[in-house]
Image 1 (cartoon, rainbow, N blue to C red):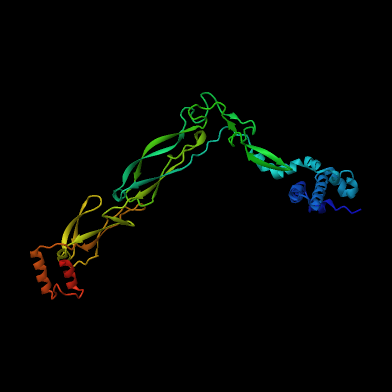
Image 2 (cartoon, one colour; image 1 turned 90 degrees about the horizontal axis):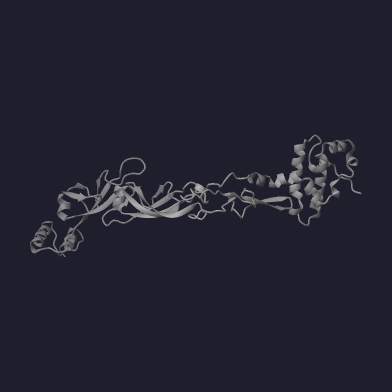
Length: 374
């Protein structure tokens, strides 16, 4: 006959261990060697029985005292090896329940009433012109979202009625399933986790506590808004169930192209076609900006094509911080395609004075006049 192991050795604790240490050691071994985790493993089953026998003795003050004095002789007739698994689970059910089902039990506290839930956020896209992004604007948009039902005031019931506690889960919103000593918590299929059912639903929302409606809202688009910017409209998403908080509406801004101006970061950029005399002699030109305002632009003498002339502070407003970008005008040359005889003669005379003729093909100034005259 094999010699039985010391109970303290089996649980891996010292002889001075207190009750809590012994319980903790047994929990660890029970989890490791439980038959559900070691199906078909006879060695694990034996260790599980052995640990259960040790715990049965050491967790009982009188049995432990007798074992400390007389060893295994004092515990004959009380050993766990003669017990089947059902006996062990029944005797130590509190251990297993606390170890595997405690969290579920805590979560299954009975609910005092329907739980409000926040509604979903919604998204929408809006198009504006480059001018509108420059000056800012107000736009009206139409949304289709859930709102609290005014007929039942968001509780889903007919007048005077109230939600009732769900019978299958007893108002907790979850049910427990036992597998061996494992306790699994699942959402109640009858109330879908709410803990309550509506037996007399509101005729307007049919017990859903909210209804879908169209709504027109005005949104303010700030000056300087950029492509793909996102505006958050608080409280204009879906309403939550059972009077839950409204979600938010997120509006993405799409800025359409402009025929005259383009945006580069915070700068407003455009081109300005000038005649050859204006480029050579310089001039003052009145230009109209994207918002319709007028600015007088000085063209310096000998201005090359492609020069960037800057009007400070006439770009887009900066959304973060203060100030604005600049308006940048890029010069081009307006070359006429048709000339009358008088103008053509004057240009030929000018070309001769420069030492060039219409027939020159050097690619310098003569090339310019060749293209200019056609």
